[in-house]
Image (cartoon, rainbow, N blue to C red; front, side, top):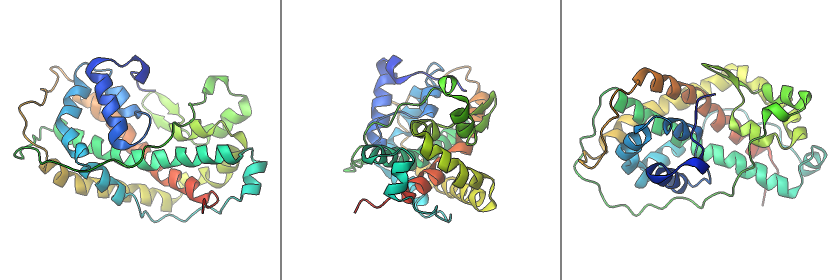
Length: 275
């Protein structure tokens, strides 16, 4: 796993950035990409200080959410409330599962937009727009706090094996993305998903949807970047920054984020209607 600064240990400007990310993305947590960047002195302050105007006016989030909304993937078979009950998911847990999935559907596309903007900065592109236009944009209603991540080291062998069906690969080895570790509190549900959903990650249709989302974000980023103001108040790039290491980290999130969007939506939409 990549090094991270926990939200509980953040202070000063980093804590302020974390709070703004939570507010603008309308989720009650800060994704790993920001926690990782915060471990390099000055990196998150520089990156967020430069690209934040695109998130404060909502253009970055709204664009990413629109681009992620209609990816062509066949739905999962619906899961009835009776089946959820057998799987160990009661009414309260159903609401938590729904909110957890919605959180990833909401935050992962915005993270992809942030990472793509940061990649342009690391390539040497500089914001050139004049000033910052006033915005009346307001974030959506924030979601409730999700379940804590289950500790893979403390799980029984069977549940650990179920969750590892969803493992991704990083430079330092396999890891289970947060969506599944949050849903790991309901072993019956994860056992069901390991059968009906995990195999989808090897399907051509699924990877085509991932590639389509990446391509859409890539195509939209230059226009978002062009609106960023050339502000003298923006911090300078940290000296001695290892760009290759940061780009490798961004590549990891670029790989896993589309899965969080697609699989988060498939799980959410398989739940019973709330109407």
